[in-house]
Length: 384
Image (cartoon, rainbow, N blue to C red):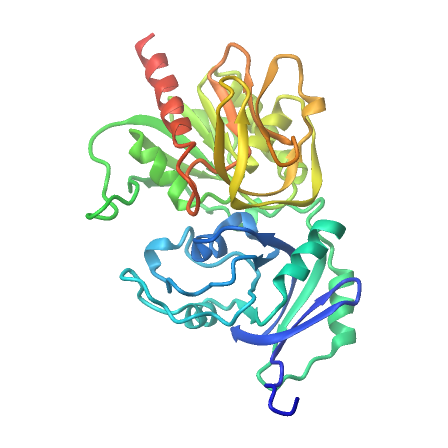
């Protein structure tokens, strides 16, 4: 036992359970909700997804770090996830696109990581007991005040009732013209006039905006706090509601009136993740906190209109309560894991949304057609 290295990090759960491991990245401590993600690739995209604000991510796949890091894969300027939990210490990068290794990236970005954790045990605990509040600490000297850490975890307010969209949203409007990554050229700029889309940024991933641009859209991004007047002043042909973190009911206080105002203008409207939940609230439904949420790139979803099953990428801890959907709102998609709502559309209108991420990053491309459906709705309105 004397040859065992001294733990330099610990993860303290609100119930008093403590996991010890080896720290990497930044030092210090952070308090957040703990979730697990089952994706086998894309740890950098996951860590920089604004939807993970207020959460520490446990990766069930053990090989984290093997593709290194590259600025091209950031979904926003800086990481938003509070920390990272992995089974093994990050492996050395081995990928032609890498420009740095994960440990240095985590340190430079101010995010704490812990390795050497029994992530299977931790994941089972999350599934059985729900996503816990945790304190994650990294000290190279291995000195921890466990009582204080557990107390911090227990006293953390949690995500229920918390509006985080304003914290991760842009603060002023901007234009977006970068398109999806294509071999061998990489990213490219969209040229010429396109379908005028206003995208509301509740914590938008860059690849969502790229998918809109690649579908022929001329994208203007507005902050989460934008009003219906702000949106309609730009004379859009369609409105997009982005993904984002926090409790949808809290964000809905200011987002719902904006969406209801836009709906009166009879424009095509498309929402993803938090944007899906915002649309559902605006149409009269309610949302609820899930036990441990859906986080991964292998979630089967059934399209109730076609019977087709898509493998999707998901990241959400709240869900739309399908029992509260008004009669004029059709449930279009459901999770084959637990039957929870994954999509809606407004009868007779080009207004629809999905709970999952059709842009993937990381994940499968099964659902990219939704961007094309949105573009086709705008083209049809232009031609009418």
